[in-house]
Length: 196
Image 1 (cartoon, rainbow, N blue to C red):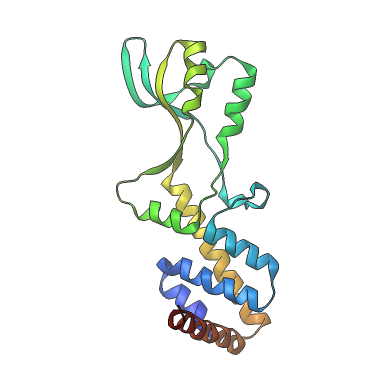
Image 2 (cartoon, helix red, strand yellow):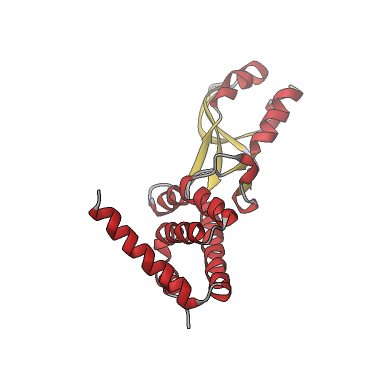
């Protein structure tokens, strides 16, 4: 036998944000500050770099640019880091290649569901001047690419963690108690709507 919350999660993966909201309420009711912090960060996005979990870290292998190199115009082309010879600039770029994905899980899900979007990009156009000074390449845009597959990995990690949390709550709190907390949540949501 499984809790209503676990059944809801397993029946509809697209409902992850709603399950997280319910977990947030349960974390409050159980006074579980660690769970509350994690769930809140997934719902709202991560503001504190120290709290970003490993599954949201990404090491990009390279940068891309659009611009003119010599007499040839390029669009979204691989940018060789060897064009940057200044050690200070190279260290800055290398630190940017190690990035954390801070946005909320609902933003990640929106990008995943967007059929026209193949990946997420991080604008690094502030490096255009450095690139011109060191190589003569006139770049209109420099960016880092985060593939959609990485966002799917994050979504799957959150889904799996939520599932593990619910199973652990079933073991520690009990299925009946967990079901009563989610029923209490439904009543609270209805009361909030009525009293708005």
